[in-house]
Image (cartoon, rainbow, N blue to C red; front, side):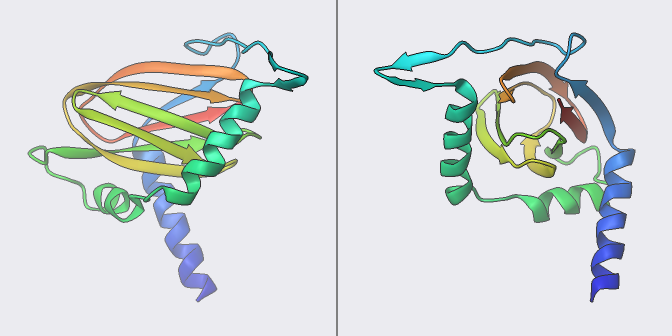
Length: 155
């Protein structure tokens, strides 16, 4: 059973590496990087990183993963006529995050744990805004999606 699981995981990783990949670091070369200020609520200081963690914990309880659909899209070499494509996001940071993907008639928040990969299916040929906070740094990107798209985030 372990050999099958290892083979399956290796197969998925190999396919993910062949997808259109964009690597972003939350350093000076990233699209946007801002640190959130600390907001004081009475005597308690709350950082945006802790707010993100709270949102992550709440969302992960109700989030319905699209893993099967994403893997089917990645493994089956979809036809150009398919109305949807997959977006995968790899979080290589030390922080959990919530990534918001929004486009024309599309909005989804995706919880992505530390060193985890998440994916969603989206309609093709649209502009999508990607935003989230990763370890007190903001990630923002707009991309026109026509085919499988992969984002790797790290700190």
